Image 1: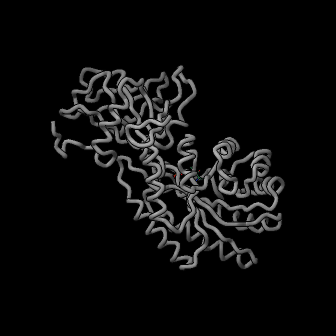
Image 2: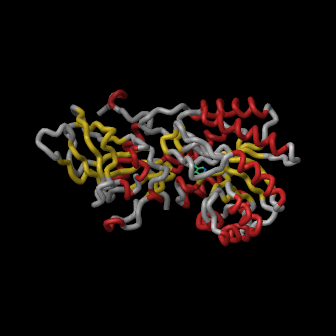
Image 3: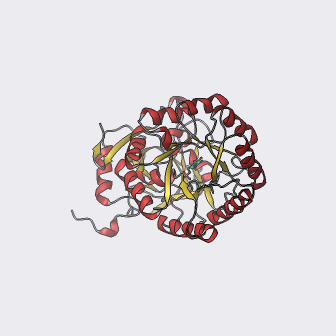
Length: 398
Ligand SMILES: *Cc1c(COP(=O)(O)O)cnc(C)c1O
């Protein structure tokens, strides 16, 4: 039977053919699980390179640390932003050269810095005097970049306050780093994840400009700006296209630094992998809590502890799809565990056809980032989220 184009509402997330393949792939498999389409990750990387040819990419591997994802990006020539010695070990095990690794966490144990240095890592971030001294003692002569505090206004998943310091502190750290025999290499910031206000990069780049000039007066020439992550994935709330981000950000850089700008690094996580993931879940139960309630409660076999932690405060609103047709009703979505915080969406209502039934599968799109590695080990006995990596739709990797 020929289906009409307008019958297929998922065009933004997946083609109709590929959706059919996902359904076929799901047959007989115990839910919940994540499917990661590696070909899509590769396409996202290529698109980033095409749109931002002026940057060096350090994949923020915490977004999706599956070996297959790391290897695919390694083969594309990516560099990597690691947060721990465990991530560094994984990268080295997968054959990533230490020159391609940045130790991008401002919070590090002294012995972990020594370990990274011993493995050949020579690029470290810092935002405090304490950490700077640890780096100087354990990673002599290394390149150091300094993380600036930014506001995360406009970001769906803010990262403010915990990381970065005020430019006055950073200025002092740069001077000290030089005196301690390290190479003050550049500045970094992160404007907040899923940042939908591109102007936030403008503010941060202006702070960089100020610091580049201030330390130049002391004879220190910084060489690099790390623009962090924050680039968008396709969720329910609309964001600009990557092309627009790229264009605007280059304009901000050129306004402050001219054509001959410093080396530019980015650390994309979400934007490289989110769109490549689909979670397949099953409805365990549908109930109404009072006879006249307008809303029904729909309990899924995945929740906050199964990998959807970014629904905290309903920050990230995943596109969720049922194949049923019919009049649409509001629903509260909740997870399967015995913790009362395990509700996915209560204030932001999702609409589903009234024909929805227990046992139905739901498809949660844009779930390739910050899901599987976030899932709990065994809360209530639930196993961590299973992930299948496919080369492209329909083809599972050995
Ligand atoms: C998490 C993180 C990133 C990735 O951010 P996204 O918004 O997912 O792209 C980049 N850099 C650092 C230092 C991070 O902690």
